[in-house]
Image (cartoon, rainbow, N blue to C red; front, side, top):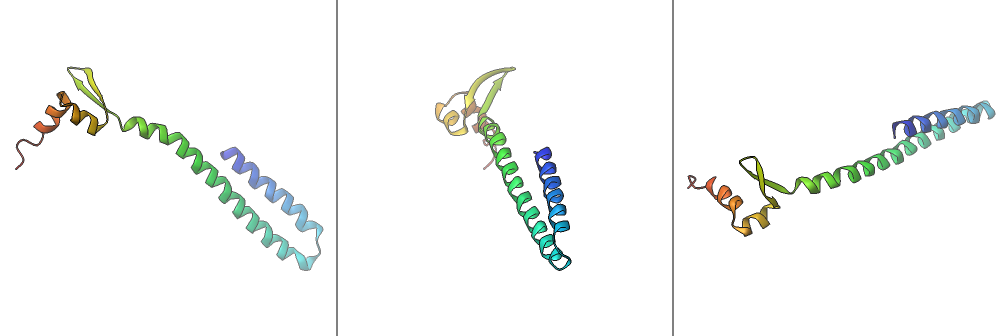
Length: 104
């Protein structure tokens, strides 16, 4: 994505330079302003795609991280989300409840 962003920047400035050079002196400021506006818009679009790409990368990681692994003596004995593990009433439930026994 950085290569794409850098390439787009180079292309906009390269083409913009030729467009500005081709017009008369009075129109150069307007063309330059249009080039800057287009460049900013193009970078915004590229950044939006980069953000969308990061969401697609991080979403599966977050879904996997939502799963809890319960270990006893170095072995995984249970694996699921919090509510399901509590409903099972096994080792995780006892471990979870033991954390709150002394609080009252």
